[in-house]
Image (tube, rainbow, N blue to C red; front, side, top):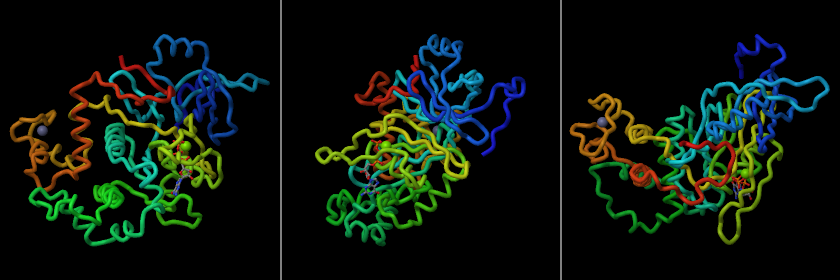
Length: 382
Ligand SMILES: Nc1nc2c(ncn2[C@@H]2O[C@H](COP(=O)(O)OP(=O)(O)OP(=O)(O)O)[C@@H](O)[C@H]2O)c(=O)[nH]1
Ligand SMILES: [Mg+2]
Ligand SMILES: [Zn+2]
């Protein structure tokens, strides 16, 4: 990776560039350029600290932020003099708060377990919308495929599975028999079908058995992808983010722990985001704490609709400039697809997600319980 020398850097040779790797309240860990080592402990210069207080955390720092720092001779602690503008960031939000998960990220991987904890496509769809509008390339890692039954595996590679994927998005097709009457289509098999639909949509997908020591084609593909740029891992608690992180590093820098026996949910093992540089000094990976929900209150109706790839072509073809594709707009190409007048309709789970997201736009005062569990990198919207 190459970072342009900042002009401030040139003006003041004492200031060096670094990347924020961790934040603990008022303390930062930073990795100095060009080798991103050694990790230094840092604090903000008083002026910046004041600005931060006065802004009431309007734009707090996140892992991945670029900074300029100084270090007095003999001092262990570095001082952050300036925070450089962000090239991109990944955020989720309620009407009141925005939580920046990471800054200057090139791509993000939603780590989703096929089982334990339960597969939740709603999270994926919100994540995809946030990435598409935040200029971050989305990837999907489906973990714990080893927990799927042999029958599900057989279904996943069957013609029937492919036919279902096709029929479910065919506006002219009435499913016969309907989904609920197909006995082989267990919850598990339906989750796999839903995962495969993301691959059909063209998102890079990886199916992983992270506890299997043997080499896996998808894991190797993923290694290649993260070997350049900055990659952020996100997902619900217990899906295997830190396990994947450790596998990418070939070591165990991050603690992982079992999903709870009784609730089948994760235990929020990771509590702070951490950025690490892969051996060789090229790619950087950020492991983040598990989150419950991905709020998209920072997106408007137009952005939401246009973040759905299925609607992309239609939104480009929409005859109206700046159309927000509202219900009842005559001759709007996006509305035509949503009304089943196009070549394809949305996969049922995607349609459900879109409906929920659009619905939440209508009641902007609703803040969901448990939406914001970690106080890192938040900012107030108003
Ligand atoms: N069977 C199976 N277990 C896995 C797999 N990947 C991860 N696990 C297990 O799932 C549990 C949770 O993994 P973690 O890596 O701690 O999950 P996390 O996403 O980092 O969770 P938080 O830090 O709480 O957000 C651990 O017991 C892992 O060993 C997998 O592919 N298959
Ligand atoms: Mg973790
Ligand atoms: Zn339109």
